[in-house]
Length: 131
Image (cartoon, rainbow, N blue to C red; front, top):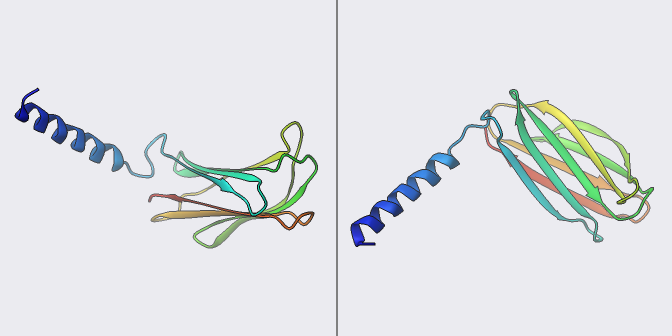
C-alpha cells in the first residue's frame, strides 16, 4: 500500500468515526452503559437506552446473597425519579430496577444509588446520556 492510499484510508477511517460518534440522543438504538464494584464487593450495572423519545433505564445490583434488602434511588440531573426498596432474588442474588423516564433537554446525567442496611454496603452508579 503506497503513502497516498494509506493517507486516504486514515482520512476515511477518521471521517467514519466522527460520523458515528455524532449521533443525536434520539437516534434509535443509542445505548450507554457503565458498571462497577460497590463498597463491599457487590457489582452494579447501569444502562440507559433511547426509547421513542424517552430513556429506558436499568440498574442491576448483584451481591450473590439472596434475600438482601436494598434502598434504591434513581435520579436524572439531580431530579429524583424513583425511590424505594428492592430485594435480591435467586438464583443469582441480584435485583434489577427498570424505569422508562423522560428525556430531558440537554445531557442527562442518570445516577442510581443503592444501600443495604444488612451490611452497610453502598453502590453508586452514573451514566451520561447525550442530549
